[in-house]
Length: 80
Image 1 (cartoon, one colour):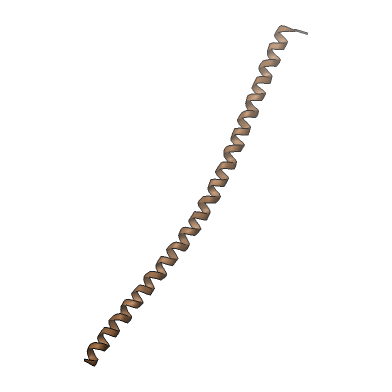
Image 2 (spheres, helix red, strand yellow):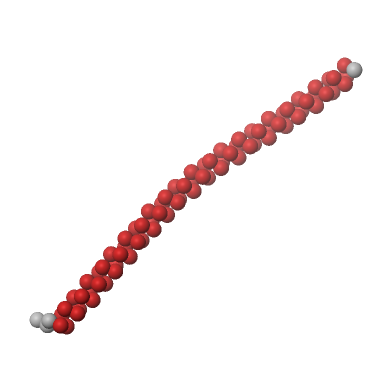
């Protein structure tokens, strides 16, 4: 009977070690996920900044194109 108790105790300890190892791996995985989430967040913010910059540049280009068209029209209507 004592031998059976020792075997059961050894099995419980083995299972506990496996559980501790699995928990450690889970925590490592969670830590990596948090790091990746942080990187993704930074990338998304940078993407938004670049999209705004592109939008601003497009608006500025359209303004310049319109100024050229207006200037050309004015010069043809009112030659100097």
